[in-house]
Image 1 (cartoon, helix red, strand yellow):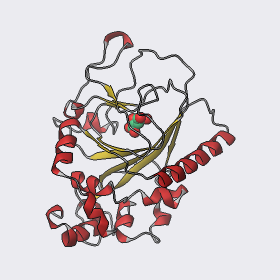
Image 2 (cartoon, rainbow, N blue to C red):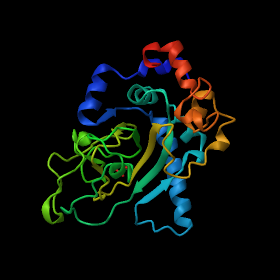
Image 3 (cartoon, rainbow, N blue to C red):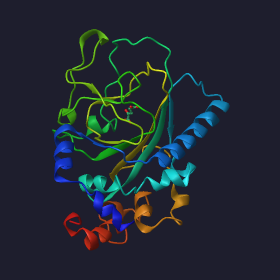
Length: 277
Ligand SMILES: O=C(O)CCC(=O)C(=O)O
């Protein structure tokens, strides 16, 4: 990992925003070339799935995309964003899940139906007995298409809802919960969100196909949430990326890591000691 990452460490004001709202926008995280290249790769994946029989009018959920291109792997420890991830979660982390979502225009008129509001992690929310629920993981969403206006299949959130175990949905399946807002971001912006934040993907009522890459980071003792067939990348990855791609010395090391298990910690000890505890 490059020393230049240190420039992008989480600031106190970013931490406050994330703690208070459950999300954080990193504007212009990707440059124009990255947006173009990642969009071309996403389009290729979409075209391939359509050739295989996927209905192009439907939203595509495509997990486990990291092995599809080195450009996807390069974002795993991306210097402009990954320092914020370790700044929030600490060093005993890895990429437990990744998915590409392509949301084509629905061709429908806008309506008020309540979106599919949820917290991430499925049964974790029923089976862990604590209040508020523990953070455990977060996702980084890299927006490749323009969702700077509402109605474009925006990612919606209820800011501050990450500390609430339940969400009051409007009666009758019409309307959105109190405080719900569309996240309006441009191509290249990254949005970090706490897994507990009540959020929803939404229909695309515009003419602009929405494309977003989601990178989920969590503690190393959390299981993967998709196939994550990334072990073939271990040999060609530097030690920190290899950690993030799920490598470990042995099973015990996911719970009680040695220095060999977590080279990110060693790197932080050397370059950002306050973050190595
Ligand atoms: O597509 C979206 O905007 C929402 C994605 C989502 O709900 C998730 O990644 O957990």
